[in-house]
Image 1 (tube, one colour):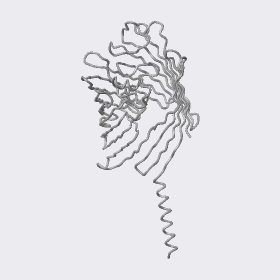
Image 2: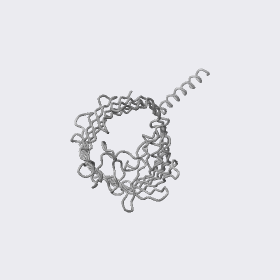
Image 3: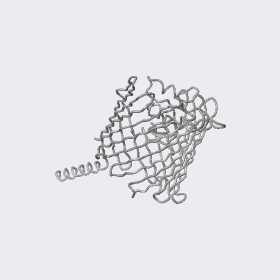
Image 4: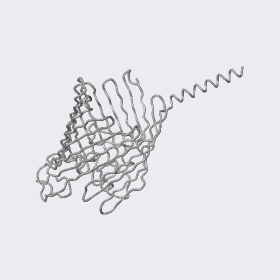
Length: 406
């Protein structure tokens, strides 16, 4: 009897291990990226970045996953006057433990959550968009989705976080001995109703930030109602409004808004035509300059950010060949108040609101399943009639990227 018992136990162990192997799956890899960025900026400049990212994705069960990534990066800035570089930078990339649970609050409910260094963004992507250390949860019940998040900026690299909410933040970012971003605590609460009308979604996001850096700090809150919809599969649109309330030693109010429309024809080489408008208040009347949590560039080649600015853009994209994606864009840039935007080569008394126009192009080709080559270029033509000095040269930039996955 012992032999049959041993055989039964061994068979049970083998089946258990096989079942566990199916429940516990993993993948890992190494991504290599070379990024070369020559640009015209008070002379000739090349920004070079080389990164090696190791990652592992582990399925811990039917409803939970662990993704871990970390990278080594070399970066350098080379000009006609000299060079500066960071030979060794080690940090985490996206690293999160995520999962989901169904039917906790009814048969149509789904709860999704993630914690770690996770991707967070507001609806517009112009208030903040990037990796943050924190947690996020989303509950869907029927056509209603509720979301909640909390995060912290103080462990992020300052040149990734781009937090410039006040003078204290600017001092931290300007200090060459400081690696981490200014310390702010962020929280969000959102709601979205899908298909309120056929093909139409409505929602609202609220964001709050608590300044842990300055004394006194600049605390703030943002409210962002939004609307997006589609007409069939070819025409889509979206619009949003952002109200900002902030307080340091006094209160400030600001507004931002945007709209986007896109027409796509997949049967015509995946043709896409997109038009967008983005507006952020400047200090004028009862409004102050809108200040996003992440002060990212407004366009490819200009120096302007999404504050005291208005941009009108048209983008044409297509995929003429398999594995090849291309796009062309044109953008007109304006300031939205009499406050001076820009710092170099301005007229003694700049007038008008038009700042200049920009043309940009992007191409990406998938050489193999493991290698992608891409190029992004832009040139900004300043308004020398009323704003910039006569003879101010256009500002251009080109970014060449090679990515390889092992």
